[in-house]
Length: 603
Image 1 (cartoon, rainbow, N blue to C red):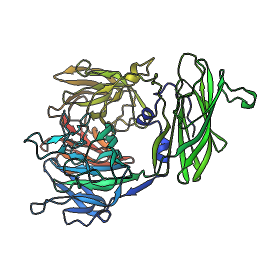
Image 2 (cartoon, rainbow, N blue to C red; image 1 turned 90 degrees about the horizontal axis):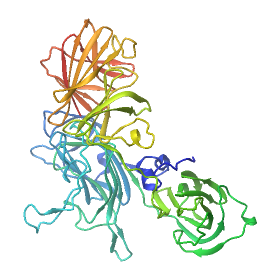
Image 3 (cartoon, rainbow, N blue to C red; image 1 turned 90 degrees about the vertical axis):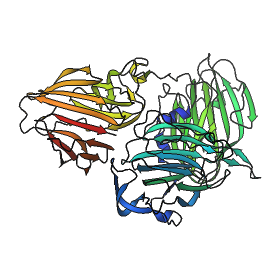
Image 4 (cartoon, helix red, strand yellow; image 1 turned 60 degrees about the horizontal axis):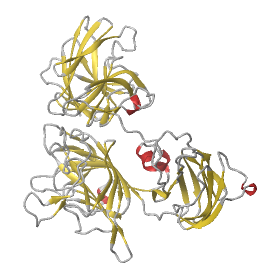
């Protein structure tokens, strides 16, 4: 696959990866290991169990309920047995680790890369300020020789607290680079967390770790080690644990020579008809080549040493110019501006390459970004440009203290766009978006507020993006008033909204029923409180306050929307008794609208 017209994107490989532009990298055949059974770990006499289903209860600290089965690892300590750590049978170096974790209320655990470097697992629900010891933090190193209160050092807090409620599944993704050692066993590079994502949000990036964190298996850095899951602190569950190994050598460009041609080139010329203005031999593709100050083209020829046979993907870009890439005489990437990538099957050994770098503007320098990914090989640079990224845009972030309510478009996961939406900030970093065209809560999130760069940069497209961990609440094509009336009807009418008592009240009507819908962030930072009153003929009309693939009643008044990852909590004494009802696309939690409705959405 070749992608063109990327000149308006950030012109650097790292930025393309962070924006998710390089989807093919995840499709390259890699060495992925699943470790989802106790048989994948060393024998353990602790309190771990193989389970099929698991759930928590907000009112029961350090407790998870589970059924025996396969696919989920559950740790449930007892008074007689505090539990033990799980240590994988296989050892790893450079890896990508992805997993889902469920934390019991007030519980604590951790995931150690190589058994040495801990990512903290903790019930950090509702905290507005994250520390190194909170969910997703890189735990501190430790020195017992220091005075009390000063033993911990070099711990790293996540950029923001995007942890979710206990008892729901949370997603953790880690790209990790092991420390490097020379032939004498001396450490030459520290370990690095290249990136850590929690619930879809980047919380660490290019984070160097100068030594093992507290509680490591060994006191010093090592080249390889196991996945270790802390099991002596509290109730926790893990599932869908995937480890992708990156243990291949990076291919090397060698036998490089170059030819320089003066002039403007926006297509591949007939080189036998041109005269070179300069020729030479270089050891490294990044070595300086002297070129005319005006427009010119550099033609590199050399060899690429492929360490093992398989499918390889090349990513190439020429900042402020155009580029092309040939391998084995095949024009893999045509000459053009911007970044492009494509996959090709290569055999082990030396293959000839040709690289064209065309400077098309008199006033700017031209660089070359060329990277490769393949079997057991994380995307790695073959050439890295020193040219500044002129197309980078400073983000336009919305300060919730200055602009707590913003009208904008909202893009949804399925590609649809809400054009009549308002986003509201909460004092405890709990925020939401409301669909004014349907009278629905569209999404909620925890963490920072809004990135309005797409909305206002250049001409803008009207879209703002949540900066925290987002929970999408429903299908935008189906109004939650889905029993006897729908917002898709011409009879739906929005009557505006207003700030009121620290929250926002929305007014709308549908088929003769008037709604007053008041939403406010909870003072404890754990979600939203919502109150709905109606006026009109409400007999036999009901309202869906939650929808999802599966809804479970945890206890009287508390309901878990399993696949969406949030709770609905109602007063068990409320006269409005919800019922879980199945439909063609999942389940709904239904209540009558003939009485005032109050509930909390906890996430």
